[in-house]
Image 1 (cartoon, rainbow, N blue to C red):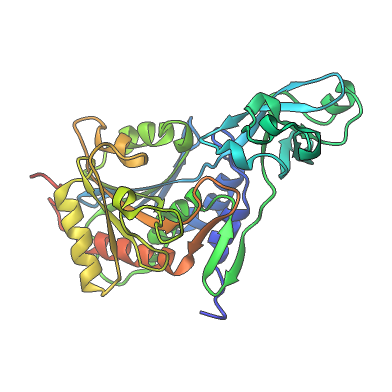
Image 2: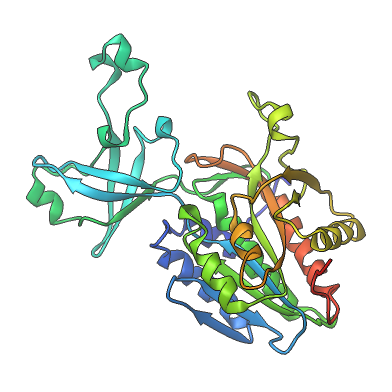
Length: 355
């Protein structure tokens, strides 16, 4: 796809800065693109966005993709104006230092860099050491604590200043494909279903969930509120097609190989079978992952809501997860949308996934 152009909705989500608990920029993008297509649209106390199509339909199908991302939160400013922070979500400490960051403040964006002692000033033992979080700081060019606190506040959050970019056709890099692609997929699925001429039996509820990176918190409350019969979480999963990834331990999945369908205790077998049938019907290339326990996604919270929800998990293959330069093939993202549209349209009244 040499002339591939990313969808505007997805591009805007990727540029939005939305660490867990601070999702307002991503919320605004979802509001702008999805609300006009929904029959009902609501917000909740955790910051979820809940869009409903065909509200009288049966069964109730919930699609969930989290819109939060990793970040840093300012916890302390020293006398010289350097900012210290804690991490939001699961960071690799080896990649934090030497990054440009953008801090979200009440007065707007403040730029800075993450600093640490230069290699020239380290002894041999220090050079082999991975710095602890409290040994890294953010430099905003302030000369004193008062000057720094005039520009930022304790509790302000930062994200890496690594923006979305395509570098080979539909293959691109971004700091937060995890999981802006999932939020895009659920919203875009609802938009396309709203334009679909085929009759839709189900009520479809697309939820951009909050706070997944710190414990699937938004999905927990949203699933309780929606009370679906069926649900599909959409997230990213590891593409294992790069060097130094042992397929014996992590399975075999690849960029450009299509949606990844999960199997295991977290996955309802009826939902899995229907997803597989939809992929085969549309001749969508697809891949598989097996997880013997609750997955590290919104699916684990949704499945256990109320009396239980028949839950599936569809993932976009991704390289270099939780680094500032994640890599995705956007062709896989498009195939996930098509798969979910077909899945929703094939549901009949009373399809609740019981087995």
